[in-house]
Length: 163
Image 1 (tube, one colour):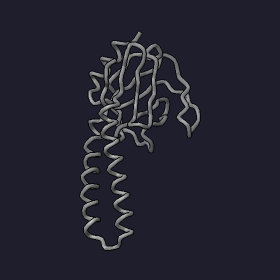
Image 2 (cartoon, helix red, strand yellow):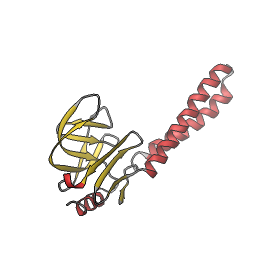
Image 3 (cartoon, helix red, strand yellow):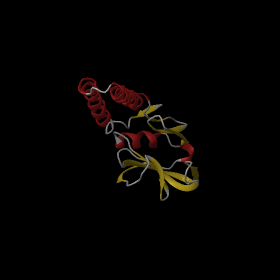
């Protein structure tokens, strides 16, 4: 199994949130004199710290991956999709911007797993696939698009494992 990292673009955002939240917690603790408001804002701040640390951890520990049997695509801890390599055609580097509202959605004939509104790897299916992401019901797709920190290496590793 070869890892395909995808978090490089998102990490700085989470680090900024982490620093801003830590500073905000300190300011709230010393600036406010309403005890119940201090408690509420401190709880929200601590919750945000936990979310940011968790996201940074997941970005580091749960990258996309490819093996001889499957391509595994992830989006933080919220999405984990295993695709048999036998169902995939040759991957290619294809950077695209997306205006979608969700990080994982069907756009046209593709499942799009975007990172900050962009994808840079496109992997077509040998045959159209029926995909159900929940809210919108089942849709037929012809490819999956996702972000990889090093798209050339990702395409090389995926294509080397196709049957």
